[in-house]
Structures are given as structure tokens and as C-alpha cells.
Image (tube, rainbow, N blue to C red; front, side, top):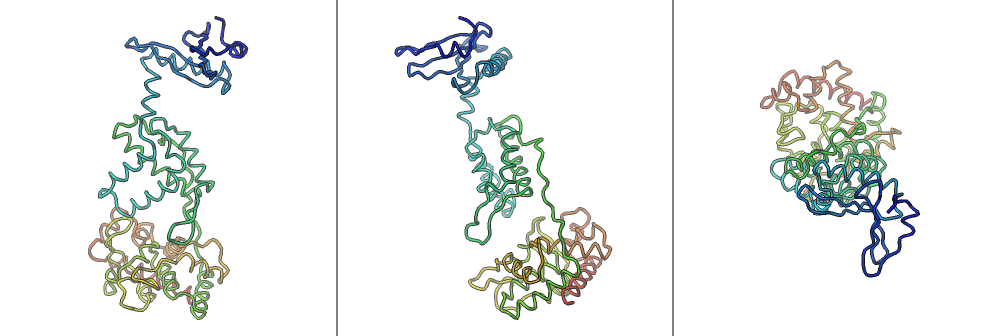
Length: 396
């Protein structure tokens, strides 16, 4: 039989009672198989190290040229020489767990070991981004190209959708894509420990810049926002939402650190918040005197910022902030910009990065750990100075 070419393949006719084979004279073990149904595929035939004969279909005729498939066949047969069994490996992959199943295994294993808030964020990214894009893929067959394709899809917003139960949308973007790839890398390391894979395909993937916040409000912009808050309150805007915006500007707290803050954690006598839990764990956070003055009036709720209805805490901050910024003529202001503005004010006063890290509650050895029980006078003074500076700007 001559070398397999397109002309030879086109000349083959099916036998209604048996499979028809044509074998290549240039590469031993490479051939074409025509089924009684007429379906034709390129195959390789080989013997394993144990002497068992195997046939492995590579591609349907028409999906690639004979020369293209011959290159793949040469790789498969070369692997056989090195002791591999491509057919058995394919069956193993087909029976392996999917990415979706692996994610579920990871989440179940992480309960009690990973913080509940972190686990909730991981679950959200898995359900919104990972499962729709990679969930059906078999884990051993996953490649770095697949991970990079997922990253590009998230960046482009292909998995963006309306949030369930809460206003707004789950967006894409480079920051979300980068964090999702990082989380997937952690999940694949879990798969590696469980002997599901031998190498992590996310390792080495060039992650997109995480979109760290660079925007902050200048003193002039703070003045405009302060004026907008006073006008909005007179016009009937949610007083709790306005108070939350002011509190974030005066403390540098993260959004949910403030909104889900129990009143019992506030210690005005020692100018601090005694957090039972934060992104960095249990923590004591110094805050300025002006911040306590920004809190809503007590109404019997256990929350510092109670919801307008029900027993929960306030949740509508992004919409309130958007309305305030529209009134003030400010662009590109997110909730995190409020935290960044506090940090920028601290830097403008001249505080060191280590002090600012302590004010923001970052997990920095030698800063937050030192003030775990009693607030340090230096940090309290710094928090008071920054809050005072912010308040002056807001009241211009």
C-alpha cells in the first residue's frame, strides 16, 4: 500500500460487512479506517510494553490533511517507544473528574479550613466564571492555553451577568480575570496534591494586571462630594447610605467591614473598632473621633448601618454613591476609591507606608499584630489626624 494521501483516502470505499484499513508505507502504524457506515478516521496501531495491540483514532477524515495528521501520529508512536500508552491515557482522561467536579471537591474540602468570606468569594467566581468556561473540561486534559483563554473571556466580560438578589452586575475586567486565574491555580494545586494531575496548568500563565485602584478624591473633589451629600440629604436621599459614605472616607474601612459592622464592635472610649473578623482575620482597628460622629443615630438595631427595612444591615451603598457622585459631577468613583482616598490623605500628611498599612488593617508583620489588644497611641493619633483632614475637606 502506498503513502497515505488525500487521493488515496478519497479512493477508499466502505465494506458493509467489515472495517476497511489502508496503512501508510512511510510511517509504520499510521493508517486510515473506514467503518461500514462510511465514517473514515485516521488511526495509529501499536503494541504496548506488555505486548497488547491497540488502535487509537486521531481525527476524522476531512478534519485535517493527511500530512497534518501524520505529524500527530508520529508523536503518538514516539510516545509508545518511550513506554506510553496513548489509548489508555485517553480512556483515563475520559473517566477523570471535570473542572466543575474538582471545584466542588475543593469547596467541600475548604469548609472549616478557609475563612467563610473567602470561601463565599471563591464559590461566586467558580459559579460565575470557571464553570461556564471550563466546567465540562476533564482536569488531566486541561492546558495552560485553556486557562489563558478563560482569562481572556473574563476580561472581555463574556461571563458578566446580573447579580441574584442584589443590585448591580457581576462584571469582568482584568482584575476579576487575574483573581480568578489565581484562584483556579490554587484549586489545581489541590488537584495535584490529590494525585489527579501531575502538573498545574495554571502555573506560569501570565496573569493580567489586577487593576489596582489608582483613583482617589482630591481635596477639591472631597469638597464637592461633601456639598452633594448635604444637598442630597435635604432632598431625601437615604441618610444611612450618606452616613456610610462619610464613615468610609473617615476610616478607610472596606465596604463590608463598615456595612456589616455590629455596634458592639465600636469602642469609642479607645478610638477603635474591635473586629471579630476581617479579610486579615480578627483585628483591632484605630479610627478617628470624627468617624464616630459620622455614625447614624441609634435605632435599636445591632448594626452600625441598619437596613431601612428588616433586621439586616444596609446594602445599597454603590447606588447611593453613584447618585452622590452624579450630583457632584465626579467620574470614576467606586466604593473602593473612598478607601484609597483615605490612604492618599494619610500619605499626604507624611505617614509611612507601615503606618498607613496599620490604619487600613493590612496584615503586615510588626504593625497589626502589635496592636491586637490595646490600640497604639501613635496609630490612634494618626487615624484621628487623617479623619480630621478628610472631614475638613468634606465640609468646605
